Length: 403
Image 1: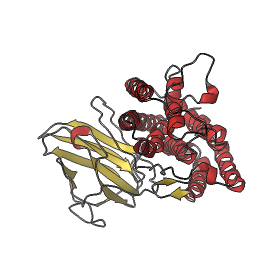
Image 2: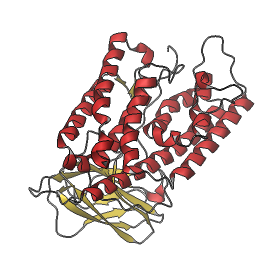
Image 3: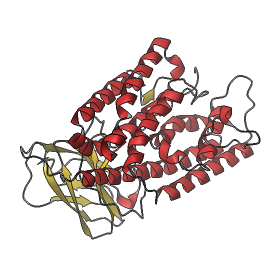
Image 4: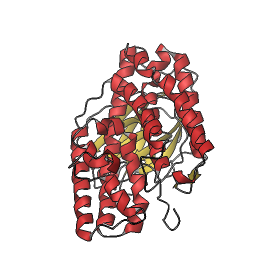
């Protein structure tokens, strides 16, 4: 799309969560990530853990972690807030998306503890002073202690832990969606088309990562994500794709007025905030994780591979990546249980997720991706084949961990 700025794909950000009480434990193997906003630890990676909990000091500008490398097993963090705002602390998988453990609502002067079970791998620590933004991040290496990781051997507890982790992930992505939508809506309503186009695809990724959950709210989904081709007679067209057509106009299109843009922007924010409220209490049993992962791959097969999801912006690969992210996170949250029940299936899914991700990486372009209409038929066919190859074993995930 000559003359149209390529939307940026920003790294995921965590936003305010003032009311959650999840206590998350256990971790699955980490996956590749480009870290952002890292700060130096007080000890360099490779140093060994000392006795007692890992000390974390948080203030407005720093997130000091007392050590950069620890042996695998049960990890204990003592998080002290030396700032003037309420803060939070997260242990994330290396991809910066999957929440391994979190401790929230740490008031000024208070210390709270977080205990997680972590196998060897690379992780990310993050403090969120003011409970806003991306967090002040740093790398944490967990080396192999030689001892079997003390994950609870009870299968149901492994499943329950995976559900808790994924529920936290959904809420975090929804909060990021709310924050991103407000920024997008402000630019769009103000007539800053360049900035709105830049924010469009990256913000929508938060929606696409949790699409099965978002779609479960049948009144909100069509208001937020309906495409023009899907409209029913008499249905008012609002949401992302209404703005998309206005920002990436086809030939002969009549641009919306400032008043019309403002109305769409206001409704988009209002509906997204309502989605945020509803996900605060959403219940996601294990079957919803497994089925949701498959639904996300189906979304890729039905809409993203065909190019009909983002028919004007051609930003389908952003959506494609986000759907794959969401499916992978659901799988990884259930992976400890799956590895106990069906290790061969766990290995197969690891391999097929990696193959699909490697293919997607070929189309990375700057901070985002190539436009989908730039891909040739053979490239689209290869992506479709890898989606199909992953979809078949992924369809077995639910029965493997639920039955």
